[in-house]
Image (cartoon, rainbow, N blue to C red; front, side, top):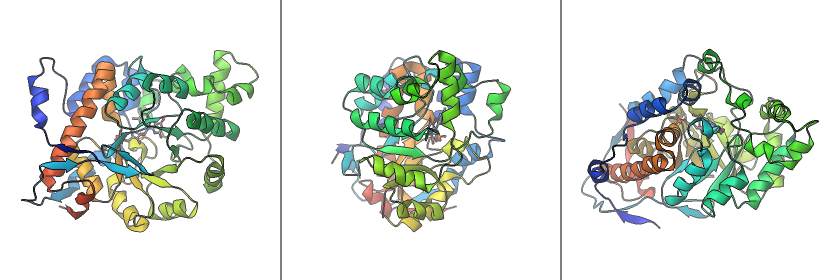
Length: 380
Ligand SMILES: Cc1cc2nc3c(=O)[nH]c(=O)nc-3n(C[C@H](O)[C@H](O)[C@H](O)COP(=O)(O)O)c2cc1C
């Protein structure tokens, strides 16, 4: 159990000589200054008209917290337990690929920052450094692996095996990316990080993938990734097959309907992530926070329900947890922290989220994450 006093969240940010953006909006502006036009556009943008991207954040304002008072909130336990492991805070870092777009040290910097705070780091299949490189950089800290199913399924199974061997604790199978969303910003910028090779590290170091290629020159490797990365025929049989190949818990990421949440349980999935991929896949889909309560109602605690898409502040985390999520993922904010100041920038973002979350839990009138279930959220 991690119980700690609520510190004054402002002090550290005020007394430091060096200014670092606190608000998400300013952080985004700072990242824009540091990144290429294509790289920043890739991270910031959503699919289509970006209706879902906008809705993800705006919809949080439809939910209001009814705080409780006079409940002695001097000690706040922010810890959560997932699959038998206790983590000190109710958030993880979302799987985000191509992190070299934000900073040369990419996943090495992010995984070290996450380790410094004992926040689990989820490594994307299309990361800029490999599973093994990240393990060397960040040691035995908690790490999960996010899998994009490869057309050559033996490549998928081998990547999962590599993650297991490196001590990763869970597999996140992302299912909302069976083909790439209609990303107008990237087309405008003529930008494809996959083609630039920014997300090739795990493939380049995978013997099963390499042995499937006719040639191992850089162009063939990139073509091989493009041939493998999207798998439109993905279905529940792949999930059950994956289950047979690993002893790690499997979470399915990208669920928005209660029916699919039920099917996940029927197919033996260990946890789900309610997510619309940060508005980057099908534009016009429901905001993730609007999908959450219906899914929580269907799941009724049978397996953990995690959440992402639109978390920007501690109060957003309080809303998602009070609506029944067991934990949340932070996405774009940490990427902007990375772009702004490398590992230190990610540490700053995580540190601010920790403080903001503690203060928000306390001011809602709860003393622990569990206690948040007693805090009512209304639509107003
Ligand atoms: C630049 C970028 C790259 C991403 N890459 C991946 C990825 O490789 N795998 C994955 O499952 N999700 C990926 N995501 C989605 C995130 O895991 C998460 O669902 C999303 O960022 C949540 O939205 P938010 O950042 O607006 O809160 C990516 C998101 C962004 C912004």
